[in-house]
Length: 265
Image (tube, rainbow, N blue to C red; front, side):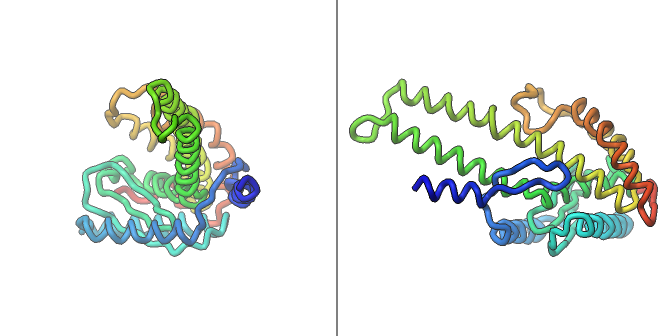
């Protein structure tokens, strides 16, 4: 059993592009991509598609450029698809396998093609870095550890006493705060960094990513302590983006075609 566990962990270790961080991912790409395709088809079939021709054309153009940059840089070999949905939520997502959903509510925050490129490149980076599979693997591992703990603490007959329940509850909270949430914030920083690289290589000015997130920081959020949030604070995100910017600017300056901010949306 332990040999199988060690082999599984060894097999599941990989490096995140551009950051070199070692990640544990035991979900096969084919399975993850199939889940992404199913979710994409379900959501796109349930929601209304945007009829704004200008926005649809801009999204398609930006997606083509950003995904071409991702393929040239990291070769994920995804089957890219995109849909613009008529939805007021300011959000976008790239599901495993390259299935992109852009909600119309995020367009006012993008303002121009470069802002849109920052959004799409960030989401594409999550998919290329296999963050979804990593999160699933972490959750499965934590749940497995808690189940083993439950067996170890259970009394005769398989029942847990009050003390054992408190111990397991503390372990569960510790795993959430100490492992899963911090990793989610790491994923956001990685997607910001990789996303800046993709948008710069696609010919979009990466400084627009900072302006985008300054605008996004104006969205009212529920008061959650930073240590309980799945996302970095706006201040931390902007600080990191400024740190990443010089490297992204070098890539942008070497890009064969430059689109700057692109057209307004």
